[in-house]
Image 1 (cartoon, rainbow, N blue to C red):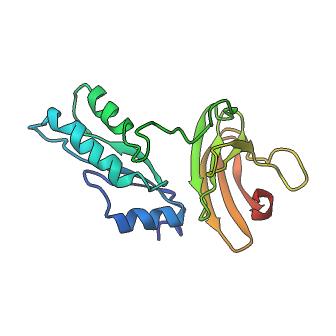
Image 2 (cartoon, rainbow, N blue to C red):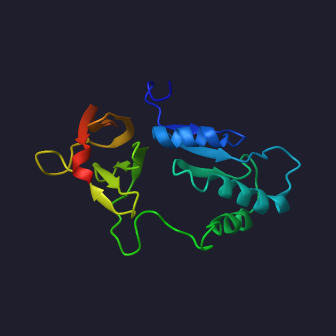
Length: 193
């Protein structure tokens, strides 16, 4: 139902989705925010680094989880929680930034919409540059998505929304733009190797 209604993200308010639900979101290209809650007093600030670490570990292998929330509707210094969460790489303990890769170009100025295809390709529409940027999940490299006749794929002016539907031969994208009517673009998977 979410995909049929062109939703591409879910906010889990005051709870964390079951692993099976997060995996389903990943397979469907639905982004999600996972929330550990704790918005009501009494807030145990000393416990937040530990619970934040547990949340990050639980969601580590879910590429569709794009936002972790630690104690919404509260006021506290989040520095210790953020440090604890950023240390959660089970292999090296270091933080890995997916995109752009170190030394690679950053084509995103004002990202306004994001979707992920079933094969893990990430697409971001940029409101400032009026471009559709692809992000290769294997190495984080960014590229401007090209139209079949060459040149950047037209996305209208001031794009702000993006929806996606995978088919066997193509990725079907809908771009909503403030300065133009909704644009539907079909991008063949062959061009992405």
